[in-house]
Length: 294
Length: 167
Image (cartoon, rainbow over all chains, first blue to last red; front, side):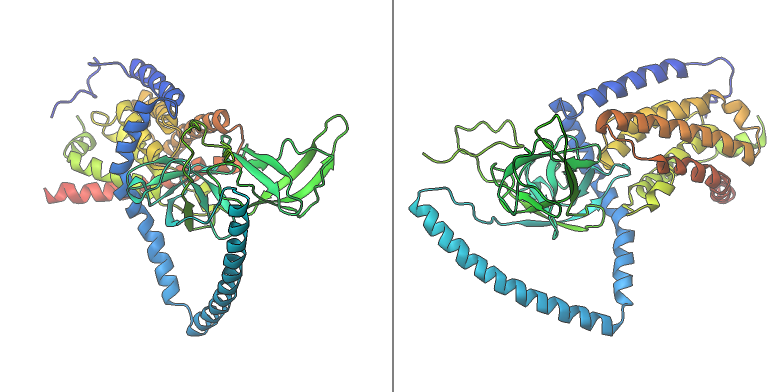
């Protein structure tokens, strides 16, 4: 074995030059990432190759959950089962009622020749990585393009909207959360039906342009308004914590809290986006409004 | 050439690859909650270990490639960890001949400085991309990494010794 490192005369590229070249390269990659499709394609291949490793890394947690479930007392399980049965009955009843109402609504809408927005078939997926990013604005799930997931699909858990599919790899996909600085979601106040846009950024969400002449109170729930092809209407998004009027601006200053806790949720549902009509360019997935039929 | 150098020369490259794969695996484990603020990046630690003890195989190029793999694996902006790793590893490689002579205590301080450098670069890049400072808890990881350094060395030496004696 040759002994290059221990000789005092250095061969090859000097570390300083290597450092400069590679740091320029990584800065270029930082700039090009998510802007240049060749980088995305390369990323997709590597992500597919890395998937077994991610799957393996997720196994210790799976075992932990499995073993902790094994050692739970029979009593607890019975109680839990009973609770779930009750909840299931209640939800079934509600679903039937909702179906009835939906049917009535769709009859009315077809009378008025309006568009129908039914619930689509959803795909369940498991979060296999929350990344080591402390901001945690990206998650990785174990379903991808092979499971008919497309970039831009909405992602929800049992409490509300989590985010949107950002990048799709063959076996996995990346979710960008509500709090990601690129996310914009059309929402409405569930109580009054007033629509606005919800912006993510700086690890939080904000309602920037909500006019003060409209009514907004603490504990109001914001739901998706359905005025786009991405998010179906009526998914809970956030709760209003505090509102204040500022002199000088016509908008409220609002403090919001996301309803879903993306850190703790383990399983998510992916809602496929509705097909855009042909004349609508699909270039802006966020907040692309669906035109009403003539 | 002293004995420690021959010792490290006899190590098969396979072992280096396996250690990197294991480190990446540990870094990919999706730990929830506040625990992951505390855990240092094991890939960075293993990189430094090999850069100090096996510089003819592990250098800045390796750090760059591993950084890219980590970026893709945890869905970070591409190049973020690569940039952080090459700078922290450069500072280690540059002073390698001195670092080898130190005892574990002083080595741990050097490792702390390098990990801190990497953490600062990561924080700056995140600040640039998300416009959001994640608080000072992220800077705990370098402390833990430095504390783990002697332990990591002991474990690696015992594994390598096992291989060395079996040959």
